Length: 105
Image 1 (cartoon, helix red, strand yellow):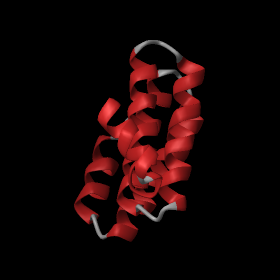
Image 2 (tube, one colour; image 1 turned 30 degrees about the vertical axis):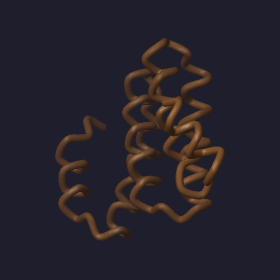
Image 3 (cartoon, helix red, strand yellow; image 1 turned 120 degrees about the horizontal axis):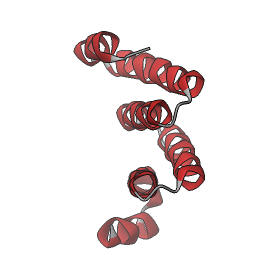
Image 4 (cartoon, helix red, strand yellow; image 1 turned 60 degrees about the vertical axis):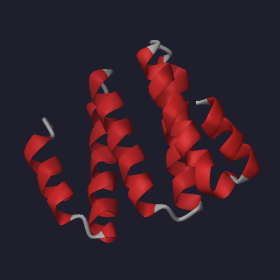
């Protein structure tokens, strides 16, 4: 993570959303639910702001998985929906098909 932190400081446009997503994943694994939730949302916003559609889609998918694990199906469904729209926009139809077949909602 320290390398990505350096990249995020040097060029936040390319790396900030990646760092935020990694931090969200780490906080999720450590049981810091509120902080993880916040970092997923920040990662999604940063990817959107910098027009990384595919990474915004990935961040939404990871957030959805997180919310599903933490018994929040409403937020999970929202983020899975966003991920599907963004993956379609990016041209990843097979990924959308995979999500539709594997999402337990």
